[in-house]
Image (cartoon, rainbow, N blue to C red; front, side):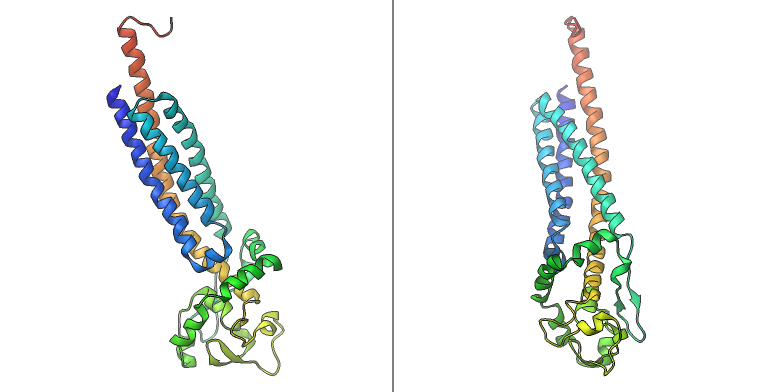
Length: 272
């Protein structure tokens, strides 16, 4: 019985360690400028990671100190958290399965179309109330100013591999036909294209294309890339957690079987 309890405690210690990459993925998302402005995914990830840590600590204590009710709590709570984590992994995949950039003529960077992304993601940025807050957050960052420091010549900028957020927010869409002066300053053509983004463009450094659909699409493209990275971390951790949980269940069952067998050998039939 003592050996089984030690094994259970060791298994739960591993579960404690597995909470670290989950919490780390949430913290990493929170430090990314776009995710810190949108504030959608990082908090659920961090909360699940912290709950897994707390439950694993309970199982660790219950295993080493032979507290049966703590082990039962661990088995039930960890199963619920594994299911929640699996649902979150599946949700992230489903909302990021669509949407990608498309090439523009004579450009190394890509352009982004808002309609190509999932409806759930689009609803996070389409309402004026939500976007005004996100827009203010994005415009306060230095991502567009960094382009001016890095690219002086038009061809250098056209050959640059800038981020989706910079492509969508810091310059007008290529199809508008604006003339390059600097990465964030363009001369509008006499006859602007019909696309509303072309009319939204402003050389005011606090405005630029932050009101454009291309900016919203660039934000979603950035989110998709970062969420997919976090999802890979969560998938690997989920598989490891399931393995640890199954081993823990087997160890707990063996411990209870050993206890019943020991009582039976001592002539104390637990069923009488």
